[in-house]
View (cartoon, rainbow, N blue to C red):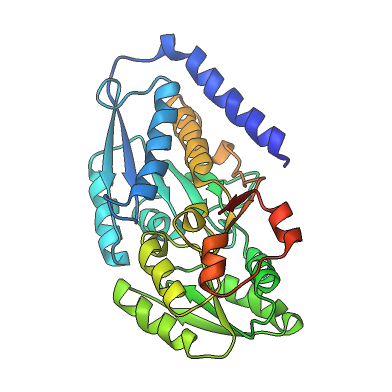
Length: 328
Protein backbone atom coordinates (compact mmCIF):
# COMPACT_ATOMS: atom_id res chain seq x y z
CA UNK A 1 0.00 0.00 0.00
CA UNK A 2 1.38 3.37 -0.98
CA UNK A 3 1.38 6.50 1.15
CA UNK A 4 -1.11 8.40 -1.02
CA UNK A 5 -3.59 5.52 -0.73
CA UNK A 6 -3.15 5.43 3.05
CA UNK A 7 -3.73 9.18 3.36
CA UNK A 8 -6.65 9.11 0.93
CA UNK A 9 -8.28 6.28 2.86
CA UNK A 10 -7.81 8.04 6.18
CA UNK A 11 -9.16 11.30 4.75
CA UNK A 12 -12.16 9.53 3.29
CA UNK A 13 -12.92 7.83 6.60
CA UNK A 14 -12.80 11.14 8.48
CA UNK A 15 -14.80 12.93 5.79
CA UNK A 16 -17.47 10.25 5.78
CA UNK A 17 -17.74 10.48 9.54
CA UNK A 18 -18.11 14.24 9.46
CA UNK A 19 -20.87 14.00 6.87
CA UNK A 20 -22.77 11.58 9.09
CA UNK A 21 -22.76 13.78 12.19
CA UNK A 22 -26.39 14.77 11.73
CA UNK A 23 -27.39 11.14 12.00
CA UNK A 24 -25.67 10.57 15.35
CA UNK A 25 -27.70 9.42 18.28
CA UNK A 26 -27.92 11.73 21.26
CA UNK A 27 -27.11 8.88 23.63
CA UNK A 28 -23.73 8.84 25.34
CA UNK A 29 -21.33 6.30 23.81
CA UNK A 30 -18.45 4.81 25.80
CA UNK A 31 -14.83 4.34 24.67
CA UNK A 32 -12.02 2.80 26.68
CA UNK A 33 -8.33 3.70 26.30
CA UNK A 34 -5.55 1.50 27.73
CA UNK A 35 -1.98 2.84 27.51
CA UNK A 36 1.21 1.42 28.97
CA UNK A 37 3.11 4.69 29.25
CA UNK A 38 2.53 6.89 32.33
CA UNK A 39 -0.15 9.56 32.38
CA UNK A 40 2.43 12.35 32.72
CA UNK A 41 4.57 11.30 29.73
CA UNK A 42 4.43 14.35 27.41
CA UNK A 43 5.15 12.53 24.15
CA UNK A 44 2.70 9.73 24.85
CA UNK A 45 0.09 12.31 25.80
CA UNK A 46 0.64 14.08 22.47
CA UNK A 47 -0.20 10.81 20.69
CA UNK A 48 -3.38 10.37 22.74
CA UNK A 49 -4.28 14.02 22.15
CA UNK A 50 -4.03 13.40 18.39
CA UNK A 51 -6.35 10.40 18.84
CA UNK A 52 -8.88 12.50 20.75
CA UNK A 53 -8.68 15.43 18.31
CA UNK A 54 -9.34 13.11 15.36
CA UNK A 55 -12.44 11.81 17.13
CA UNK A 56 -13.57 15.40 17.62
CA UNK A 57 -13.15 16.13 13.90
CA UNK A 58 -15.38 13.10 13.32
CA UNK A 59 -18.05 14.57 15.59
CA UNK A 60 -17.26 12.77 18.86
CA UNK A 61 -16.57 14.99 21.87
CA UNK A 62 -15.70 13.61 25.28
CA UNK A 63 -18.43 14.54 27.75
CA UNK A 64 -20.92 15.49 25.04
CA UNK A 65 -21.72 12.37 23.04
CA UNK A 66 -18.95 10.00 24.15
CA UNK A 67 -17.26 9.27 27.43
CA UNK A 68 -13.60 8.23 27.22
CA UNK A 69 -12.27 6.18 30.15
CA UNK A 70 -8.46 6.06 30.43
CA UNK A 71 -6.15 3.61 32.15
CA UNK A 72 -2.39 4.28 32.21
CA UNK A 73 0.91 2.45 32.87
CA UNK A 74 3.70 1.58 32.89
CA UNK A 75 2.79 -1.60 34.70
CA UNK A 76 3.25 -5.32 34.91
CA UNK A 77 1.23 -7.60 32.67
CA UNK A 78 -0.84 -8.67 35.68
CA UNK A 79 -1.67 -5.03 36.38
CA UNK A 80 -2.59 -4.52 32.73
CA UNK A 81 -4.96 -7.49 32.94
CA UNK A 82 -6.60 -5.83 35.94
CA UNK A 83 -6.86 -2.51 34.10
CA UNK A 84 -8.31 -4.27 31.04
CA UNK A 85 -10.95 -6.02 33.16
CA UNK A 86 -11.74 -2.72 34.86
CA UNK A 87 -12.31 -1.01 31.51
CA UNK A 88 -14.52 -3.86 30.32
CA UNK A 89 -16.65 -3.60 33.45
CA UNK A 90 -17.63 -0.11 32.26
CA UNK A 91 -19.30 -1.67 29.18
CA UNK A 92 -17.42 0.25 26.46
CA UNK A 93 -18.50 -0.13 22.84
CA UNK A 94 -14.87 -0.12 21.73
CA UNK A 95 -11.44 0.00 23.40
CA UNK A 96 -8.35 1.62 21.90
CA UNK A 97 -4.84 0.62 22.94
CA UNK A 98 -1.26 1.20 21.89
CA UNK A 99 1.28 -1.63 21.79
CA UNK A 100 1.24 -5.42 21.83
CA UNK A 101 1.47 -5.87 25.61
CA UNK A 102 -1.76 -4.03 26.57
CA UNK A 103 -3.47 -5.49 23.49
CA UNK A 104 -2.57 -8.97 24.70
CA UNK A 105 -4.00 -8.16 28.13
CA UNK A 106 -7.24 -7.00 26.52
CA UNK A 107 -7.40 -10.03 24.22
CA UNK A 108 -7.19 -12.33 27.23
CA UNK A 109 -10.16 -10.53 28.79
CA UNK A 110 -12.50 -10.32 25.78
CA UNK A 111 -13.07 -11.87 22.37
CA UNK A 112 -16.22 -9.87 21.65
CA UNK A 113 -15.72 -6.18 22.52
CA UNK A 114 -14.14 -4.39 19.52
CA UNK A 115 -10.44 -3.58 20.07
CA UNK A 116 -8.58 -1.05 17.93
CA UNK A 117 -4.80 -0.80 18.22
CA UNK A 118 -1.99 1.45 17.13
CA UNK A 119 1.73 0.62 17.11
CA UNK A 120 1.63 -3.18 17.22
CA UNK A 121 4.42 -5.05 15.43
CA UNK A 122 3.45 -8.07 13.31
CA UNK A 123 -0.16 -8.54 14.56
CA UNK A 124 -0.58 -11.73 12.50
CA UNK A 125 2.51 -13.36 14.04
CA UNK A 126 1.37 -12.13 17.43
CA UNK A 127 -1.93 -13.99 17.09
CA UNK A 128 -4.08 -10.88 17.22
CA UNK A 129 -5.57 -11.10 13.70
CA UNK A 130 -5.98 -13.77 11.04
CA UNK A 131 -4.53 -11.60 8.29
CA UNK A 132 -3.83 -7.96 7.51
CA UNK A 133 -6.60 -7.72 4.91
CA UNK A 134 -9.16 -9.79 6.85
CA UNK A 135 -8.58 -9.52 10.62
CA UNK A 136 -11.36 -12.02 11.25
CA UNK A 137 -12.17 -11.28 14.90
CA UNK A 138 -12.76 -8.39 17.28
CA UNK A 139 -9.33 -6.75 16.71
CA UNK A 140 -7.96 -4.40 14.04
CA UNK A 141 -5.75 -1.34 13.83
CA UNK A 142 -2.49 0.17 12.62
CA UNK A 143 0.95 -1.43 12.80
CA UNK A 144 4.25 0.36 13.36
CA UNK A 145 7.08 -1.97 12.22
CA UNK A 146 7.98 -5.37 10.87
CA UNK A 147 10.69 -7.46 12.54
CA UNK A 148 12.99 -6.92 9.55
CA UNK A 149 13.21 -3.25 10.56
CA UNK A 150 15.88 -4.33 13.05
CA UNK A 151 18.21 -4.92 10.12
CA UNK A 152 17.54 -1.39 8.87
CA UNK A 153 18.37 0.09 12.27
CA UNK A 154 21.65 -1.84 12.25
CA UNK A 155 22.41 -0.57 8.75
CA UNK A 156 21.84 3.01 9.92
CA UNK A 157 24.05 2.51 12.99
CA UNK A 158 26.88 1.15 10.87
CA UNK A 159 26.55 4.05 8.45
CA UNK A 160 26.95 6.73 11.12
CA UNK A 161 29.45 4.74 13.21
CA UNK A 162 31.26 2.39 10.79
CA UNK A 163 33.77 1.20 13.41
CA UNK A 164 31.05 -0.33 15.59
CA UNK A 165 31.84 -3.92 16.63
CA UNK A 166 29.39 -4.58 19.49
CA UNK A 167 25.70 -3.66 19.38
CA UNK A 168 23.48 -3.81 22.42
CA UNK A 169 19.85 -4.55 21.64
CA UNK A 170 17.91 -2.76 24.37
CA UNK A 171 14.60 -4.55 24.88
CA UNK A 172 11.79 -5.01 27.37
CA UNK A 173 11.66 -8.74 28.22
CA UNK A 174 7.89 -8.44 28.79
CA UNK A 175 7.40 -7.49 25.13
CA UNK A 176 6.64 -10.60 23.07
CA UNK A 177 8.10 -8.96 19.94
CA UNK A 178 11.73 -9.10 21.08
CA UNK A 179 12.48 -12.65 19.80
CA UNK A 180 11.37 -11.64 16.29
CA UNK A 181 13.58 -8.55 16.33
CA UNK A 182 16.51 -10.54 17.75
CA UNK A 183 16.23 -13.16 15.03
CA UNK A 184 16.01 -10.53 12.28
CA UNK A 185 19.05 -8.57 13.43
CA UNK A 186 21.20 -11.65 14.05
CA UNK A 187 20.43 -12.80 10.51
CA UNK A 188 22.35 -9.78 9.16
CA UNK A 189 24.85 -9.19 11.97
CA UNK A 190 27.60 -11.41 10.50
CA UNK A 191 27.61 -9.60 7.17
CA UNK A 192 27.66 -6.30 9.07
CA UNK A 193 30.65 -7.47 11.10
CA UNK A 194 29.09 -6.88 14.51
CA UNK A 195 28.39 -8.87 17.64
CA UNK A 196 24.76 -8.44 18.81
CA UNK A 197 24.23 -8.43 22.56
CA UNK A 198 20.61 -8.76 23.80
CA UNK A 199 20.24 -6.32 26.70
CA UNK A 200 16.93 -6.84 28.53
CA UNK A 201 15.67 -3.91 30.57
CA UNK A 202 12.53 -4.59 32.60
CA UNK A 203 12.44 -1.44 34.73
CA UNK A 204 14.11 1.97 35.01
CA UNK A 205 16.66 0.70 37.52
CA UNK A 206 18.07 -1.79 35.00
CA UNK A 207 18.80 0.80 32.30
CA UNK A 208 22.00 2.25 33.76
CA UNK A 209 23.69 -1.13 34.46
CA UNK A 210 22.82 -2.28 30.93
CA UNK A 211 24.33 0.79 29.28
CA UNK A 212 27.32 0.77 31.62
CA UNK A 213 28.07 -2.81 30.57
CA UNK A 214 27.82 -1.85 26.90
CA UNK A 215 30.04 1.17 27.45
CA UNK A 216 32.82 -1.07 28.73
CA UNK A 217 32.95 -3.02 25.46
CA UNK A 218 35.20 -1.88 22.60
CA UNK A 219 33.51 0.04 19.76
CA UNK A 220 30.02 -0.41 21.19
CA UNK A 221 26.70 1.10 20.25
CA UNK A 222 23.05 0.37 20.85
CA UNK A 223 19.69 -0.07 19.18
CA UNK A 224 16.55 0.42 21.25
CA UNK A 225 13.61 -1.76 20.26
CA UNK A 226 10.06 -0.32 20.13
CA UNK A 227 8.29 -0.49 23.47
CA UNK A 228 5.99 1.89 25.35
CA UNK A 229 7.91 1.51 28.62
CA UNK A 230 11.26 2.22 26.95
CA UNK A 231 9.71 5.16 25.09
CA UNK A 232 8.79 6.72 28.43
CA UNK A 233 12.45 6.49 29.55
CA UNK A 234 13.79 8.70 26.75
CA UNK A 235 15.65 11.24 28.92
CA UNK A 236 17.42 8.56 30.93
CA UNK A 237 18.28 6.51 27.84
CA UNK A 238 19.65 9.51 25.95
CA UNK A 239 21.71 10.87 28.86
CA UNK A 240 23.27 7.49 29.64
CA UNK A 241 24.08 6.80 25.99
CA UNK A 242 25.88 10.16 25.85
CA UNK A 243 27.69 9.56 29.16
CA UNK A 244 29.04 6.22 27.97
CA UNK A 245 29.70 7.54 24.43
CA UNK A 246 27.41 4.99 22.82
CA UNK A 247 26.14 5.74 19.31
CA UNK A 248 22.45 4.91 19.41
CA UNK A 249 19.54 4.39 17.02
CA UNK A 250 15.98 4.76 18.29
CA UNK A 251 12.61 3.80 16.72
CA UNK A 252 10.78 6.91 17.98
CA UNK A 253 11.20 10.25 16.19
CA UNK A 254 11.08 12.30 19.39
CA UNK A 255 14.29 10.69 20.72
CA UNK A 256 16.50 12.56 18.25
CA UNK A 257 14.59 15.76 18.95
CA UNK A 258 15.25 15.23 22.68
CA UNK A 259 19.01 14.80 22.14
CA UNK A 260 19.43 11.23 20.90
CA UNK A 261 21.73 10.48 17.98
CA UNK A 262 19.44 8.95 15.32
CA UNK A 263 15.73 8.19 15.09
CA UNK A 264 14.14 6.14 12.33
CA UNK A 265 10.47 5.25 12.38
CA UNK A 266 6.93 6.29 11.50
CA UNK A 267 4.92 9.16 12.95
CA UNK A 268 3.09 7.73 15.95
CA UNK A 269 0.77 10.72 15.89
CA UNK A 270 -0.41 9.60 12.45
CA UNK A 271 -0.85 6.03 13.69
CA UNK A 272 -3.01 7.23 16.59
CA UNK A 273 -5.04 9.42 14.24
CA UNK A 274 -5.62 6.44 11.98
CA UNK A 275 -6.75 4.37 14.96
CA UNK A 276 -9.21 7.13 15.91
CA UNK A 277 -10.74 6.91 12.43
CA UNK A 278 -11.32 3.20 13.02
CA UNK A 279 -12.85 3.81 16.46
CA UNK A 280 -15.21 6.25 14.77
CA UNK A 281 -16.20 3.64 12.20
CA UNK A 282 -16.82 1.03 14.89
CA UNK A 283 -19.03 3.47 16.79
CA UNK A 284 -21.03 3.89 13.58
CA UNK A 285 -21.54 0.18 13.13
CA UNK A 286 -18.45 -1.23 11.38
CA UNK A 287 -17.04 -4.55 12.62
CA UNK A 288 -13.28 -4.91 13.27
CA UNK A 289 -13.24 -8.09 11.16
CA UNK A 290 -14.16 -5.94 8.15
CA UNK A 291 -11.54 -3.22 8.70
CA UNK A 292 -8.13 -4.22 7.27
CA UNK A 293 -5.05 -3.73 9.40
CA UNK A 294 -3.00 -0.90 7.94
CA UNK A 295 0.76 -0.35 7.97
CA UNK A 296 2.70 2.93 7.82
CA UNK A 297 3.98 3.88 4.39
CA UNK A 298 6.45 6.59 5.41
CA UNK A 299 9.40 6.29 7.78
CA UNK A 300 11.39 9.37 8.78
CA UNK A 301 15.13 9.60 9.41
CA UNK A 302 16.26 12.22 11.94
CA UNK A 303 19.88 12.92 12.93
CA UNK A 304 21.07 15.09 15.81
CA UNK A 305 24.50 16.60 15.01
CA UNK A 306 25.09 17.82 18.57
CA UNK A 307 24.65 14.24 19.80
CA UNK A 308 27.00 13.02 17.06
CA UNK A 309 29.68 15.44 18.19
CA UNK A 310 29.25 14.33 21.82
CA UNK A 311 30.14 10.74 20.91
CA UNK A 312 32.94 11.75 18.52
CA UNK A 313 31.22 11.00 15.19
CA UNK A 314 31.41 12.82 11.88
CA UNK A 315 28.23 12.09 9.93
CA UNK A 316 28.72 11.44 6.19
CA UNK A 317 27.33 14.11 3.89
CA UNK A 318 25.39 11.46 1.97
CA UNK A 319 23.55 10.57 5.20
CA UNK A 320 22.72 14.21 5.94
CA UNK A 321 21.31 14.70 2.46
CA UNK A 322 19.10 11.64 2.85
CA UNK A 323 17.81 12.57 6.31
CA UNK A 324 14.31 13.98 6.63
CA UNK A 325 15.48 16.26 9.43
CA UNK A 326 18.93 17.38 10.60
CA UNK A 327 19.02 18.85 14.09
CA UNK A 328 21.98 21.23 14.51
